[in-house]
Length: 235
Image (cartoon, rainbow, N blue to C red; front, side):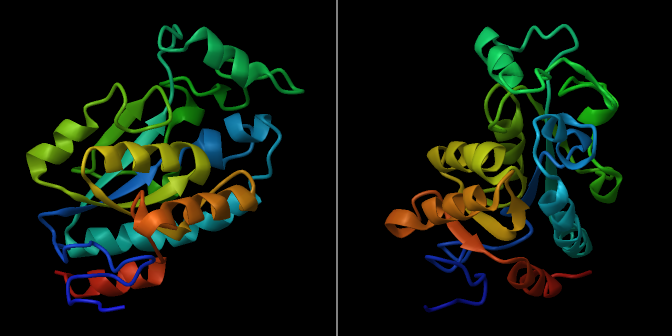
């Protein structure tokens, strides 16, 4: 694979495709690293999944976040959640989220407050990855970061066209955001060791789906290669 100076090694193509990696064009998007998905008592643990793989992911995303900050690149964070009156929650989504053995779903009361409800403790981003000034937080009512938000407007105004995507969960909110971005003309790189799903098989399958057909949803890279590129831009 021919890799140009402003490209990161990735599969199935060196990223970004047009070698346009720069502070002006490229941003990090950290998807849904909230207590509800990362901490005991939150939404994901109430759904019956182990948090161990996601908690193991946190240091790797920290290294990405620190590298992007040190290099002076733009960073965005997303949070999934609904209005306190649940007026953004469809009847199907409410049914789906409660359709589990515990019966606890969106809006139910848990140790971190009402699950996936804005303003509750569980809705907020974990302290290890908490945004600093200048890092917008996109509050979304669904999976993708573009649906019913101003995310695209923020990106267009800044001239961002390349997105490095990390976070949880790979097959749901991360994958949905990449598909939405792809349809809007953004070049995305999924950081395969900077994302995790409720089950490892789902993470692997999603990464493979991105690579299909020459990179149908973008490219797949690794934390160490992104950090290495960013070292060149440190201030």
